[in-house]
Length: 404
Image (cartoon, rainbow, N blue to C red):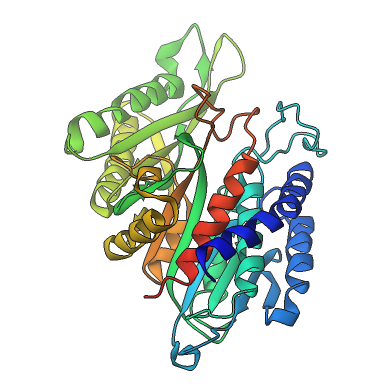
């Protein structure tokens, strides 16, 4: 499909895509509850069956959908691997404050991270690619649940989305996108290597001896011990990690005690570890455990330390990133393509796809140029910018047909 025709097809689809996006936005669903959203996806895919679209629903715990189109045109028979495209579908437990006409109708749940837009972009790409007479590679569309902490991407991979167990063809390269309020509308950006951090969870319970607050010498004070642990955990980054490496150790909640005059038997706290390399990740995990256990022992208490493994580092394959940049510059112009200077310490379960094939995750600009700022993700006033839909659709389509 020549560029002018591609632009025209995307333009014709935009009113429908906006309607779909607004409908998904108005009916947000939390992780592994995306039944209605999956229904919207399968309804749209059903309309493409005459063009060769196939899909399997009910994956990754029940709400994931994997669809695929065969290669067509010259050389189609020789295509051995597919191009994969991914979107996440889940929402967040946030009370919406956008004031838009299509605001959430589900109390306390909203699409504050743009997954309604991601899903719509992928549906738009599926619609456009189904109309192409020449697709040099098969295309696999992954509509996944539970990115927001549920690891839906990992479960979709386990179900065979990448291996070919579902589609009959292995995914050889994978692309995903995320709305990015810090980038101007019409701009895309990414970087080779680590783009987003690993995300491990800290859960610590300090156990000691309870006593009256007036008789602290009878206690083994768990609140003081927890405070010592939390303070010392800040030295993991400042004194254990190479200053030229990135790491975060954040404690987000502490809980203990029942009254002003009781030293409690138990105090707990939870937090997160973020890192950009496996080595720093392993170092931080070891230091968190050691500091908590040995500090508690020094205070006459014990520490039960639980370190739950979260998402891996989201790593962009360098060679495929170069290919992405070339495709993006050809599609949008060099002035609308940015190489991001630094990774960010947020996490993404797109990282799991990169364990199975070279992968690139890229950022889709949201902020209109005339605005100084734009609400960022996970804020109650964030809304995916509909004007970014054609850019996302075009990028997915061009990446799907760009060749190896």
